[in-house]
Length: 408
Image (cartoon, rainbow, N blue to C red; front, top):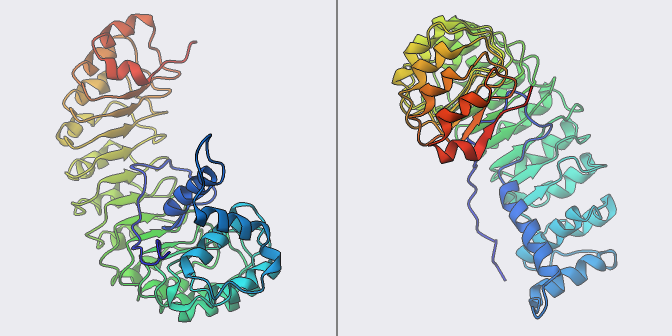
């Protein structure tokens, strides 16, 4: 019965997110929750000749009659967890029914975008105590008081507070003691200021930090010197970010993913990143950079995913990319590059994805791609490539599988 009582979290992310992400990001637990949700639906509606398990029958029955029960605390916590998940999935959970889960030692509370979540809900969530591992209350009305209730949930590993506008920088101070946090996401929040970011300084186990669309974080990274384990940082669409912030970020030597799209970073800011030798994903879409920064990008030997969309680039400087032999994904969409640029991509033998959307690429330019045998997806929408260019791809089955050419 204790099938999920001792799980260890691991954050798994896509290779390369777009510069503008979806409204809500998932917490560390939602990878498991998604699989759980699919599994639950499959079990409750078995195929012909398939008998549902006794566990499934019990969970389904309790979900239907949940209003009859005042508490689930006497049940094994994996059963309570499944009942809770089913009520959330079916949008049947209310503030009144939530109280039945007080002191149930739940591990996961995923309530992102769920209507009505406020400090009263946080009181029940916090009652899970040291069992609680992941919390997502994105889009809720949680205030400073609600965050304060989490102080005793010392084992939380993943906390997601995206698009919550009711707590302040003072409320963030209550997160300071959650030293087991490995993943923290607070998108589009006015509470994340340089002073509020001091609260993150003691989160020494933090591996993933998402502050996308936070408008007041400039200058706050000086408080992050103790975050030696940080591997993923998303500060995309933060217009306040400048080159001086990149200087502070350059100290995160274990960083593997950096999202800085649509910020005010220039070539100088990119120059500070050349020492990040573990960096595998870099997204600078929409930044005010030039070919001068390619020298610093080319020094990132581990780089596997690079997004340079909408940077106003021309053909200059791409010869420096010949050394990026680990590159698997390259996005150059909406730049002023031509066939000349593609000459310098011939040596990128590990390339699997190439986005040339709305670039000035013609038929002859594709001749430079024939040696990229691992290429699976080639995006040529709104380019100058016609039917004549297809002959260069005729021997590359993998390219044809993902070839995208918009008729003009």
